[in-house]
Length: 172
Picture 1: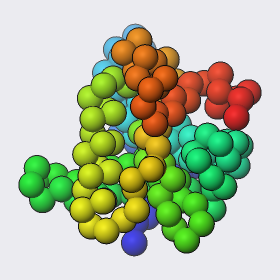
Picture 2: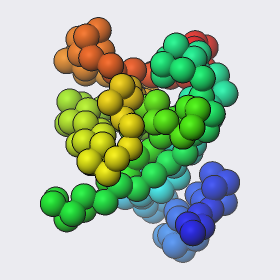
Picture 3: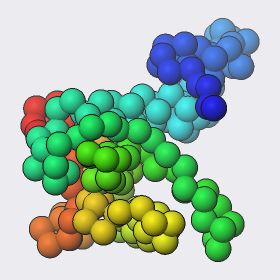
């Protein structure tokens, strides 16, 4: 079982404010402290909030054609990779009927690249090797900052779904 603080404001308080409180209260030091804390803020507060927003969109607002069928559930997951001696985190796992995997997705505040797509392909191969039906699963990249032109070209031919902020807020 995994427990985590999911409310962004409480997460911000515990991850950013509380550990740096004295530094943030010193006159003239708060700007330097905030510059130093920004990567931590992106990783521990903004990133998880964006990932949750992407899962919500996939489950409630995406058209059934987006992932190739009606969505039954959306989760996150961890996939062990013994060969690489690491565990891959999958931010968005879209499940259809009978727990069929419709899509595997990566959500990033920054701009994803081809390496993110390759990692999702690796995860799909690992799952297929364990008997999961992922042959026709789509790979989805969610970004708040836009997409690399190489990814946009691949989206036209691959089973790749690109979701930017405009699509998250206004489109299916």
